[in-house]
Length: 606
Image (cartoon, rainbow, N blue to C red; front, side, top):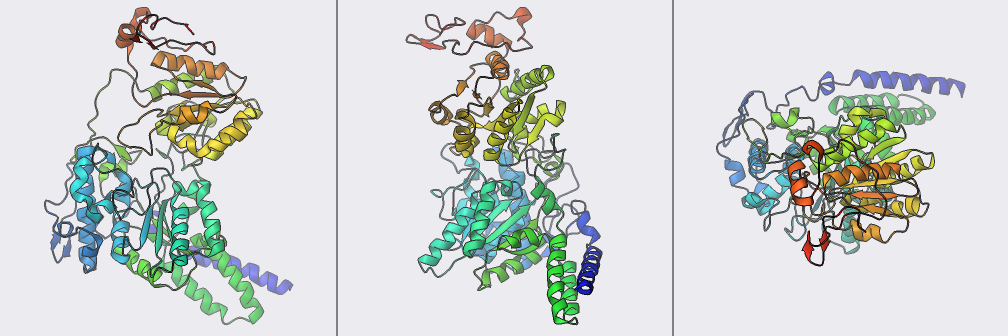
């Protein structure tokens, strides 16, 4: 036994060393190399039956093809089925630039869509929607999908009244299998669809959940994978790994500037593809030469080494068959892999791990810190966004700077975000206090209870979450915070209507769902001075949990504050520091006589 143990240990190290030897150097420079496919920015022209494929210039100015003959011939996915590989690549090139040009005119989610162009083309080429179901997690990356499913001519109305949604929406199209806007729902939905098709004896049972490395940090994804592996439901989970968990990734925090997830660190170390498969073949052939008892040991060593090299261990232990990582921009690989998975008779769930680049094919997006995730209208040639100018700072930045003031005086003040540092102001706070900034990934439930634990030890946690996303942590607010009367500060950005993102993102329910919970003190400022004062009030209030909700947008600025609300500002300037307010008092902004009627401008009236 000692001999076998020694041999297996030696074999393990040999296997690991051999695996490392098969790591291609090109993978370590994934973002630097030019992939020879249609999504590349540099490289030679590629010929297509439709004519030579014009690559985007090194630029600026940047521009796409003047004509899009392949895309013009596609109304629905069924029109793609007879295309050859060269035409599929041409289609991807034209589709990418169609997305860039369309979003430049309306604004919207740009880079996520650019990163999945080849995947979208491959999925619609291989599978047959709407009989097969493709579920896009969050679905902000669905623009290429919508363009290939009969909605290309409606993009002038993207995210506008009467136009198409920026997310998948079942009422909008039979090709939108499942509506979304929030994250981490796709695997559960795909599993439910798989069970439904099986129980109803439907002829086809292909269900594909596309989830990013950010969304998979949510606990619901692992709840679903745990269940799918246990129940052995036929489904494919495509893990779209682009290395950007938070918005933006790279915010200074207690975890450093890396993506806010140990899982992301795990998947980012997963290596590619064919050379590793050669190693597997080598290991198997070598194993057959060994005695039977050593074969079993070596099988375990091989599985462990495969986990070290390819990352299969984690997902395979959850009951999934792991495939990858695979270059998500390489149609030559994606299409045959998906065809094999489609034609398999196995009911075992599959996880296909693809590596993509967010913003792929558009240099301004590739180089931006947030990858141009959500953009206003912009100039295609330069990537310069066209934003309306405001003389007043945003309410988000006012909150962040007010919190910095409190944290400067009180070391117990800490900030928490659930993968939205840019949207909540935690990126600003993190630059000043990185060790007191905690990004927990897309995990609102965890964020709230994490804050509760901090409060138990005497810290003053400011848990900063969009109003609409706090819905995902509702039981934690009730069970872990309010019932125990812990002084957690819940900061709800985007309270009220938010505009173009629509019903999944409106923060219009928080007063109803929080107002019925005992022990909560809810604050809602009507201007930036009140916002600064309420931040100070939250920091000073230790008798129970507080909620500070404020809308998206900018403040009024000094001139309007004096004119509309009767403020008497010294030197016409907004006070630099907030003051603590008495709980239960405020300013009446509407009386029976209307806005500003009677005592409406009086301060300190109940």
